[in-house]
Image (tube, rainbow, N blue to C red; front, side, top):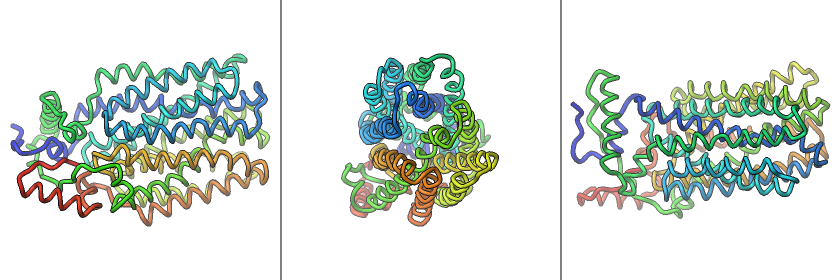
Length: 473
C-alpha cells in the first residue's frame, strides 16, 4: 500500500519516485516525436538554401537575411513562449505551438520570393522556439531527479534524428524537380499530426498545476498511478515524501535581480556564444561547402554524413548527464569542439575534413543536450518557462547577428577565418559555464532554487511556521 501523508504535496510525492514509470515512457515518446519534427523543420532552410540561391539568384547577404529572419522569430518565440508556458501551461504551448509552425511551414512552400519566405521563416521560428522552451520546461518537471538529465539528453538524441531525416529527405526531394525544395517545407509541417495526438494523450505538468492551484482528482490519480508503478518496479514501498525548502511564487522581475540575476546573465552569455557556433556551423555548412568548391550533390551528401553525428552526440550526453556535473561536461565538450573546428577550417584532406566535421557535430550536440537539461533546472516552477526563454531569446538575437558575421567573414577573410571565429565562440561558451555555472546534478528542483533570493525564502519560511502552504518550486 502506498504511503502518502495527507499533508504531502504532489510535488513532494513526485520527488520520491526513484524510477522511470510506464507513464513517463509514454509521455517521453510523445515529446520526442514532437521534437523530431521540430528539429527537422528548424533545419529545413539550410538544405534548400543552395537551390534557392541558384533559382532566385540570392547573394550571400540574402541567404544571411533569410536565416536571420528565422532566428529573429526564434528570439521572439523563446521570450513569448517562456511567458506563455508559465501562464497557460507547458502542454498547451507544446501542442498549439507545433500546430502553428507546422501549418506555416506548409504555407511557406508556396513562397514566390525571398521576402515572402522571410516572413514565413520569422513566424515559423517563433513557433519552433516556443515549442522548444515548453518542451525543456515540461521534461524537467515530470521526470525523477535521478533521471531527468539522462532523459532530457535521450529525448534530444531522438529529436536530433530530425536533422539527418531532413537532410535525407532533402537529398531525395530537391533533385527530383525544380520545385523539389517546396516539398521539403511541406514535409517539415508533418508534425501537426503528432500535435493532435499529443493534445489527447499528454497530461499537463503536475508541478505547474499544483503551483497555480489547478490540480484535481485527475492529477491526483496520475501521481498515484506513477507511485503504484514505481512500487511494482522496485518491489518495495516508496520512501516517505520529504518536504523540500519552499520557494515562494516569484515575479518576472526576479530574473533580473538577486540570485537569479547571475543565473540569467550566465546562461544568456553562454548561449550567445554556444548558439552562434551551433548554427554558424550547421546552418551555414551546406553553403560553406559550396563556396569551398563542392558540388551541390557533394555538399548535401557531406552535410548528411556530418548530421548523422547529431543523434550519437546526444546519446553520449545521456550517458554522462548523471555521471558528471552538467557544467563540467559542457566545458570539456566545447573545448574539444573548438580544436576540431580549427581542423575543419585548415585541413586540405577531404577525409580529415569529414572526420573532424563529424567530431564537431557530435560534440556540439552533446553539449546542447546537456545545456537543455541544465537551463530549466536553475529556475523555479513559477518562472521556469520565462527563465529558460530569456537566455534562449538573447542567444537567438546574437545568432541572427552571427549570420551576418559569418557572411562578412566569409566574403572578406575566407573559409578558414569562419572556422576560427566559430572555434573561439564555442571555447568561450564552455569556459564561462564551467567556471560560473550552478551545480545541479542529482539535486531536486526545489533545493537548486531554494537560495537565490534570501528575502523570498524568509517569506516562505514564515509561511511554513504559520502553517500556510507555500508554493512548490
